[in-house]
Image (tube, rainbow, N blue to C red; front, side, top):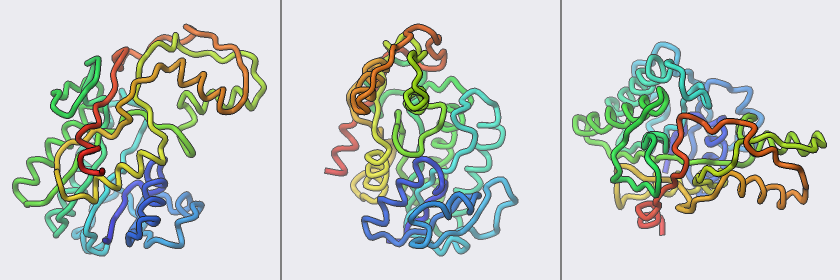
Length: 281
């Protein structure tokens, strides 16, 4: 299968490309930063086509990207700044225009990543039937893109999956992620690590496992629509931090309550992954 991956040089994209190559796929990778892409071990094993969604759109992207059988669309700018208006002022129209051009010119299978923040401030175990109530510019834009794709699929008759990502960690993660901050504190021999109270319950996956799930959901033909990509198991932020310290064999005092809890996330939510498991088992 010929697979196009956008955002290939990003945190998730890098791992998705690696898993696709292991699976024997013919990979076409794209991002706007070719220098960053060249640093990855997979660069010489893919057909890399540099492209910037911010630039005027090509008249036929499907042909430009060698007529892929599947598009895994990961590109999205500006994270982890969830509250900036550019998510729906710029990212939403540019991503929609890109996807529309692809399907107008022949794409028949699309997979795009959304976010657990589309569920808004709802607590508990969230399955795909729970209505989306997004309340940040980022989650509003992602949910709107999903709705646009759904309407588009009725006009142009292509299959699509919408993969809602929860929380990921691992190689290449953002420097502001909590485990990245913890690693820096450990490596700097800090005696204290400042954090929130740590009572929030979240759903975490290693990025390598998330990449596997994204690829397997995207390549299956059993079911379309929305999928939660998650562990299905809640873990407190405090336990996540404590487990990471154990893994590294380090000790550091946790200054609990130093940071306020984020105001854009509920205190306790995690994903139901039954639908995902039903198509990848």
